[in-house]
Length: 268
Image 1 (cartoon, rainbow, N blue to C red):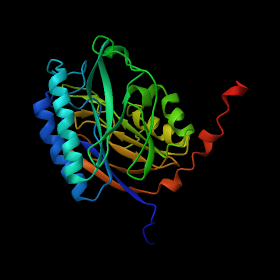
Image 2: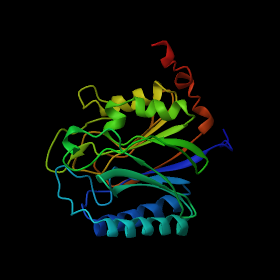
Image 3: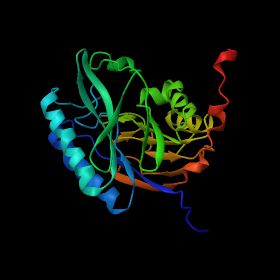
């Protein structure tokens, strides 16, 4: 069967924990270049990757707004150099505190917008402030939303919001697991593993869209970096705990959004 003209090649990058801007940027450079070399149109990184997720079981350097702006500029330059759209989750400054944000950067290096995490996990309250508002983006031949970690696991309305507004895929940068210890997963979707991979299936099936979940490569992963089809099938996932880039072709027209379009809150 020939490849559909509608196909879009996406990349999900799973680098290891570093906890510093200077440590994260070489991994971003490496995986942006690899994704572009493998002809992906868009690449997504894990939650708060620059410099690392605060409140987890590893050290993260002090918040530095000026260095973060310089880091984002570097990612914009990489996107332009390699002609690839980049979803870059990172710390960002606000008048109220640190936002857990994800920037969408076009293949020309322009910042198209940002989705800040609006639903924080309880453990994140000492480190971040919640953002406000949801967004749908159009880039790299896709209409998509972003739900960050806890939002995609426990607040399915964040994914529904994007799907109702025509998103064909929702990218889900996250951290599931840890560095110092925890439960590990023997096989994808195993019945005795943490619920996270089952939640990926739910987010796709309940909306009939693609769901792209992007985890760190941690020593004790509780979920894989994985791409889920609109029917809930796991199309591909990376090996647990190993740094790498998942590359996959998706047909955006396969995301009918049927169940999202039938959402009728006025009947509640």
